Image (cartoon, rainbow, N blue to C red; front, side, top):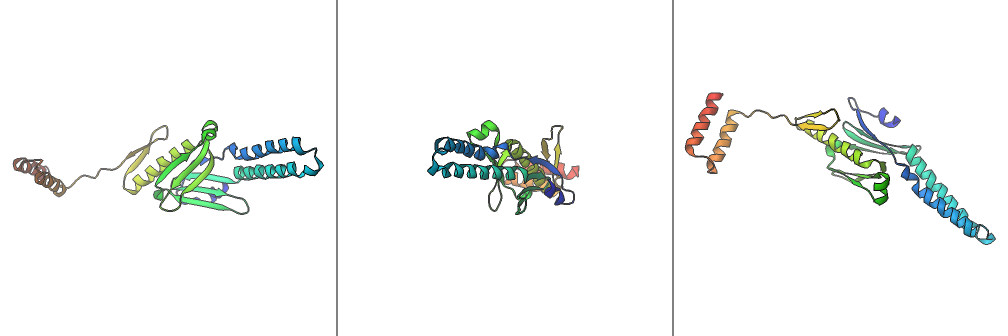
Length: 211
């Protein structure tokens, strides 16, 4: 989390930390099994020894790739952004402003649902962003949606409160209407035939006298 902490904005807080699932090692496990089978069937053949060697090299590569993904990936939800960083020497970073996020979804196959991992997809006005092999992706999605609601409500002049479970309760501020606005609404109702002329005058007098 070093990169994220070093790049937090003033007043910005970390709300959720997503983790890479151990399923990142599944390709390495698969190719290791293939390498074992290749060793059993071709290891004793002098002219075919290169076959299991190729499998073992590829298995090692997939294991290393999964290890790097696990160790050098940060995926953090803050009070205003989603920050994703991958890599150690060569670094790739994605920073999404929550105010620009349009939708969040989760893609899970059968194995992903069994082991509880998946891809969290965040759409904005630009490219679609995919965060793969995320552990407990549904919880991550829910936190993102809650924080998006809070950001949008605050932007529109509302207040967002959270209960003891941390669930956002969005309550926009209702600004009182002026007398002119209320009378204008009554005029529209009169034009639509929803109230009579007499009712219009009575309610109009009440608004004027009340103010």
